[in-house]
Image (cartoon, rainbow, N blue to C red; front, side, top):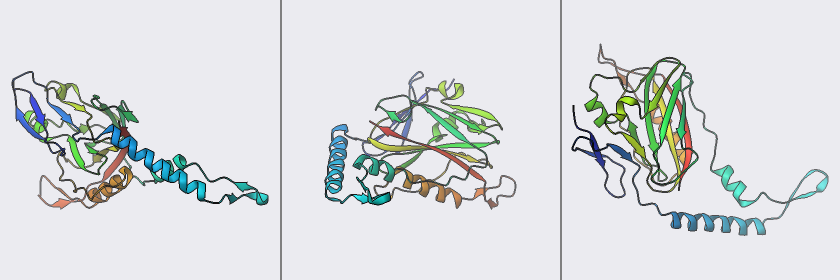
Amino acid sequence: MPGAFSSEVDTGSRQESASKQESGTPFRFYRNGNGSRIIATIVLALALGCAGAKAARSPATSGPDGIKLAPPPPFMRLSQAAKPPIALPNSARIAIKMTPDKSVPIGSKVEFEITSARRGYVLLVDIDATGKMTQFFPNPELLEHLRGDDINLIQANGRLNVPSDATSKYGFSYITTGPTGSSAIVAILSQRKVQLVDLPDAVGTESATASVTRLLKWFGELRVADPDSGKLLPSEWSYDFKIYEIR
């Protein structure tokens, strides 16, 4: 039986550098980075303080009958600004559930459950607080060990668990690391067989929702090689995503 994998990552980068290890050594995907909870707290406090000062200087708005209305509190404006709407093409009705969700401490093991109304191939992409994107499922190490297995295939009205029983045999797990802040997990379903995708580079600090929007545009322009003719053909893509906080 092949040995398990260990994935090591350089500081400040989430690019995986996997090497074969002794049997029994777990292969884990680490969200890498050196995010500081203290720095993140200071930045948030400064943002709230500046927003609060601006609100104190802003005149009250007028409501019906000339009644003066106080401006919304700063945290409400920050929350509204952080969640712009995203139009998701999702004809397959793919859905992703992550445990734990919403607020995830560094060092947590996270599990995912994906469901879909249609048959297709699932890709999972992690977007960290800096906008860097990494496909963590499936990855080259798993595909190398499970050759010929459609480990990311989901049947119509089926369910796919990550880690699954098959990937858990190789010690595959997903463990959160920094940087702290707003992050996203994007579940992508392709009508055609796709297992690895070259993702766009980060473009500087941007919100998680802005990164998701950019990723969707990128996938919309991709073409998939037909296994019979070799021609590059469009695929029908469906998406779901979860935004959560690393703390």
